[in-house]
Image 1 (cartoon, one colour):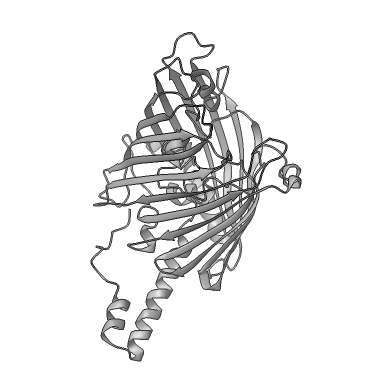
Image 2 (cartoon, one colour):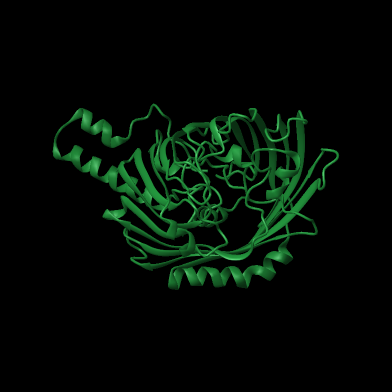
Length: 430
C-alpha cells in the first residue's frame, strides 16, 4: 500500500497559492494538477472483481507463507512472455482459477452444501497512445463457471436456507461466456475516462476495496448496498471526470435486464435502463483512492415490464479510510423506493486489516463486517448478515480464504432464527 500523506499536510501548490499570487504559485499548482492526473489515470475506478482491479492488484508482489522455487521456475517462461506482450504490444493478460465451497448448518433441507469453480482469461489491450495520457484500450474477460461435485452452485445455496440475499456471488454455473468486452478511452490529458460495451453495472458503483468475491467478502450484502438494483453484465456506457484532484464524478447507463451469460443484444431491445451518477470525494490523495474515499450515488431504474418490476430510484453512500497502512474501516448503506432493489434500506459496517504490510502491500488480510437490511417487500422481516474471512497466500500466486457467515432472521424462512455458513475459497492466478 502506498505511503499516506497526513491529513493535516496541505499540498505544496495550496500553500503557495495561499502565500502568493505570482506566477510561481500558478506553476506549482499546475504541476500539482498534472501529477494528480497521472495518478488518477493509473488508478482503476471500478471496485473488486473487475478486470482492471484484478490486473492492478495481482501485479503487486506480497510474498507468501511458503516458497515454491520449482513452481516459479516452471512458470517463469509464461511470466516473461507476459512481460514481452505488455512491453511490445500493450497487451496485459491473465489466467486465473478460483473455487468456493460452502456448507450450512440447517436441518431438513434438500441440499446443505455447494461448490463451484470459475476459470478466467482476461486482459487489457492498449491500442492507442500507449505511453501517453489519452490511452485507448480494449478490456475483455472470458470465463467458465461450473459446479464442482455438488448439486447446486454457492450462488443458489441461499434458496435452501431462506435468505433474501445469496451467501455468495460470482460462483454460479452458467458455463462459458464473454462477461466483458469493452472499449476504454481516456481524454482531456487523462481527466476524463470513458467506457462502453459489455460491462458490469455492479462493481462500478458503491464499491470498497474488499467488495470482490474473489478476494474480499463473498456475501453481496456486505460488498455493496443492495438498496440499488443488481443487473447482470450487459451493454452499458459510463464515464468518470476528475473535476479537481480530490473530486471525481462517475456516471453511467446500463441494460436493466442484462444477464451475464446471455447475448447482450437480446435484452437491450427492451430499452429499459439502470442509470446512475456517483460523486466521489478523495480526502487524502488520488493514489489512495482505493481506500480513502467518500461516495454518494443517485440512481434510477426504469420499470421492467416483462419481469413485472416497477421503476425505482434511490441513494447509496460509502465511506472508507486507511489508517496506519493497516486498518480500513468502512460503512455503507442506502435507501430506495419502489421494488427495483432487494432492500428498501440497508446499512453495513466493516473492517479490513492488513498484516505483514511493511513491504508496501498487505500479505494477509482479515475482513469483518455486519449488515442490516429492510426488504422492499413489506411482508418480509428484516435480515442481518455478518461475515469474517482471512485471506493468505500459501505460495506465490495461490491464496486460500476460509470464511464464516452468521445470518439472523433469514427473511424468506420465518421458521429459522439464524444460520451459520462455513466456506473456503482458493484462487490461483498467473
